[in-house]
Image (cartoon, rainbow, N blue to C red):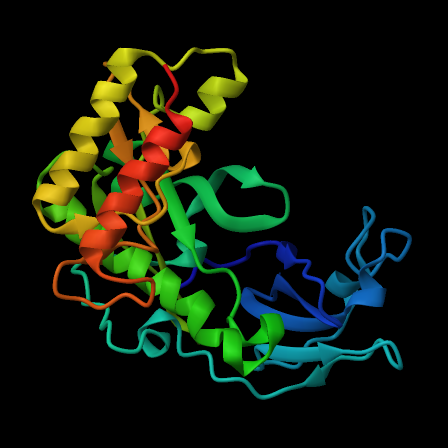
Length: 290
């Protein structure tokens, strides 16, 4: 069940070089999706900009989640779209149910990583008060709204793979990923993401580099250790970049963003899992200069 009496707000905007972009809003305690012509998103317009965005004052018919706003009229026109969530956009990759799941609106956002994006946030939840802050990762937008139906699988399939593979790696007990806690759902859309362990003292390697911390031989050994554990268990990461590797205060490393991860026996489009494992090492050696 969703929380009640939450303020109307713009939760996320996805600005892409397409004629129509998407705005994710909360109106009357329901998350809505509005296709907006790119011309209406210009900074000088107050459709989503300024202290009193026009979109938050518009009349949204009850019970409808998907709308279209064109340059011809600023009125909202209901539009049809199947909001099946990650379960229905992951061909060949079923997302197993998890015993713990919470509605998106029952989390309290402590920090947004990017302005007007709710893809990755630091959150809290009353049912997990003992854990303190946690990470929450969601697939913000239905993928088919980014560039037509052909991109739907690309966006939400990756979200489903990230949720499934992060949970799989976490439950192996290898200590190479933050602990997976449960799923995030959204009323009227279904499964949209997951939440997991947050370590206050951990910092991704890109942030450390920007803060002036040198990458040491000990860091390289720690990175090699977690990657080897993955590979020894028949898994490739697939996107081994500095922002996806977190260094804990004790010097150990953990990996995030498993949207491009595969297990031996699967057939990724990019080649065999063994080939992608070699690419993991190539990527690591490419940026891990000591």
